[in-house]
Amino acid sequence: MLINKVKNHFSDDVLERKEAARLVSFLNPYSYLIMRKELELYNKIDSFYCDGILFAKAMQLTGKKFERVSFDMTSLAPRIFHYAQQKKLSIYIIGSEPGVVEKASLSFKALYPGLKFAGLRHGFFDTPVERENFLCELYELAPDIVVVGMGAPAQERFIADLKATGWKGTAFTCGGFLHQTASSGVNYYPAWADRLNLRWLYRMYDEPKLIKRYFIYYPLFFVVFIYDLLSFNFKKFS
Image (cartoon, rainbow, N blue to C red; front, side):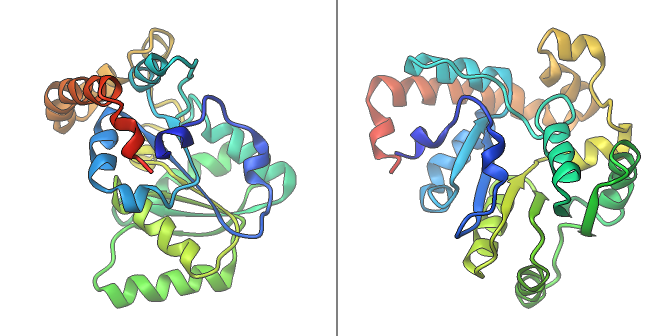
């Protein structure tokens, strides 16, 4: 089942080269609602992790222990960058508006000077042909790791289409991580927000556009999640 693809911890062996690409994404209360409407797409992703403490707590209602694993500098990103630097793996980062990824990469390069960047690109395409040509370019370039921040479900669709080209490597989605780093550097979250698991509260303060998500979609998620759990609706996520 798709819900069984949600892992409770991250292992570095995900980054090892396989016969086919390895696709990794993250679920939070908002993207869970999207996932329910995009089952065919989300079934193409190999592994999911709990993006945020609220989703991790919700997943624990299934009877297993889950921890927060998000692609940001308080969680998974430093581990990926350190591993890539150590193993001399190449990384291509795609996402956000023009200029954002370049600014964010300056922070990454400062922390990991030995990191090998295969390229940087914003996440917008003028035409489907431009997008298709770029996917082919990535296949030819063959970076070891691709990080994509386009928001759900566009980022999941992009890495699924990249895998379909025959590219072999590991792809991660990263949501708003690039924007956060470009605007505030690697220490986006204040220490108190990280320590108290109130990152969601700080994001709402920093990005007021997310207020609707937290006050409308998050409560809706809990209703839908409990319904899915009690009705054994998880069985259809296959």
